[in-house]
Amino acid sequence: MGETCVFGVTGGIAAAKATLAASMLVRRGLDVHVIMTESACEFVTPLTFRTLTANPVTVDMFEEPGEWNVKHVSLAQRADLFVIAPATANFIGKTAAGMADDMLTTTVMAARAPIVIAPAMNTGMYENPIVQRNIASLRALGYMFVGPERGRLACGDTGPGRMAAPERIVDFAMHALHGRARPSLAGRRVLVNAGPTREPIDPVRYITNRSSGKMGYAVAGAAAARGACVTLVAGPTDLPVPEGCALIEVETADEMYNACVAAAPASDIIVAAAAVADYRPASYSGSKIKKTADDLCIRLARTRDIVAEIARTKGERVIVGFAAETDDLLANAQTKLAAKNLDMIVANVVGGECSPFGSDENTVTLLRPGLEPEGLPAMSKLALAHEILDRVASILPNLRK
Image (cartoon, rainbow, N blue to C red):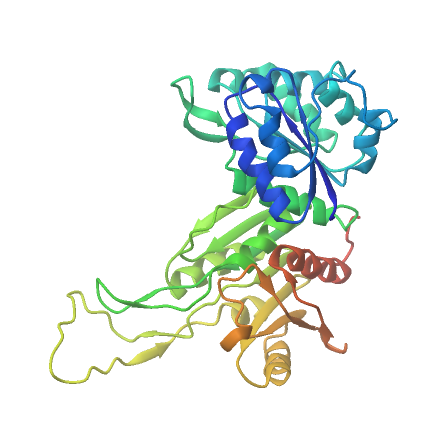
């Protein structure tokens, strides 16, 4: 069994969506133990969570244990990660006040693991200055929050208060888990680009590539979870915006160039994970190109090199590039590392069965000037993002740990 996650569920309609988050955490390899408040049991039964996690569900603080232990202390000590979803205004208020009057708040009080809270409540409650003060107090103590989102709520209101999507909660929680006891990036400004670009041929067609954006999004999410102020410049993807990141959406290589060059001067760390088109159609047809009996030739023009331009005036910035190659991986990556004056290259083979495009995993080699190439084993892109940031932290001048 993998690392242990204690998953708290409080009494709100979003408890139904919490079942999805708990199930996703199990699929990520975590040993999930659920604590429900009595109010939560009015919305979802303990049997549901027990079935999804294959573990007993705790509700009553005074129930007879199957084996002798002080249960709230036992769970708190075992936890590598603590997630509360949904978290009501009542739970947030009690935790901020240091109250421990049920199994969930008592276990939270004894926990030493990263604690991720996903608020869910009526808009008026969420915007109440008392609730905002309580959230701010908990943030200052190191508690992490994901969401809430804006949307139509169960009460009929529209506004902030809807619990974050389960995928968003799980991604942020996994970043919190992987980022624990690692160098903080608090106060650092990080620029990440991600995803493909689309170079239009006519109003219907465009040139693009197979990039999913998952690696760049993972790096952005990992940096935000470590406290960095993150700007994510992304081409077209279907991925949710990582918690704590400011998203700039672009489509073409030219748009990505302009956005990245504008954001670079204010950045301490730049991670260029995007698969930017090297070529674009030299001319754009304002009308759809009609099919004829003849072959069609499209002349391509070079796009501007984002990384080369940013690195030209890099100063003390740490710049990380990526190299996706089908042949001569290390030689091509080493050439790119030197030619573009980068601090690190993340190199990986693409094509065939080894292609990482669209996958949640990757196998890479890290190259740095003056050091031997460092091959990393296959791992999730989320875990790899933290490995990359660990190396960045060792390069970054005057890093605050």
